[in-house]
Length: 265
Image 1 (tube, rainbow, N blue to C red):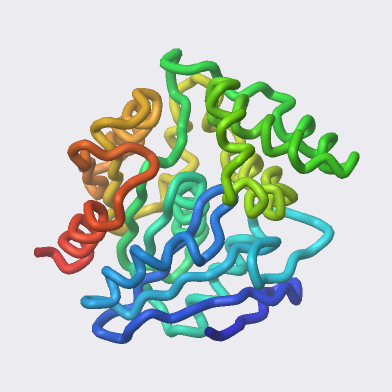
Image 2: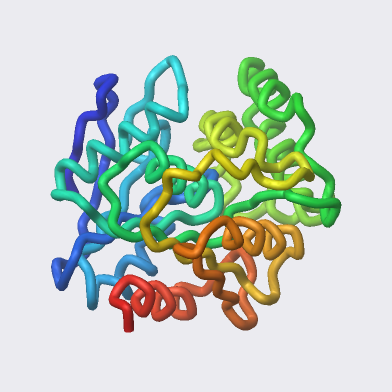
């Protein structure tokens, strides 16, 4: 484990898995800490020097009273500078959008892989309400992290109430509640991309590195549609469907796809 200091003084906790090849940095999605990526990192460490990190406000990383997506890009840039870029980069879910944003803003990345950025580009699910982030902030300001988490699951992920009831009795619920203060962060990362309208054509125009956009063939229709639309944005984008997978992708199914993409196999 090691730490880096971002541009605003926030300490970011990192962990390295292996040193078999080029450096591959993994970016987690909503509520994820670096622990969630440990199984995938272990598999990828056969071919890469894999670096996982806790995004700000999570796990062993610090935070700052003022949030901006630019600060999260700075966090990633601090990690890349420490390990020596350019690096290979993988982003999961909302972390995929953060990774895409970082590359668009000039982070030292030579190739980018994304798994199921949760775009809503059509009517295949309800769009994210315009007041979503404000509502989550209201719950958190009242100290009600459970309500903030429930709002994320039912409105952000469009899960049914009965599914949420079962989750409350699992060990992971407490961990999610602890990380709930970062829910507005991911809401801001996703801003404008879950509206039910097509993705902006110019937001990531500067991304010119090879990009893999993967989704699960057994996952949500809206995520597959979003992945297809993103992959249509340029010849440097490649779309890949993982058979039988959904958003909770099996690391053993994902790791070979990432390895083949990053090594050109």
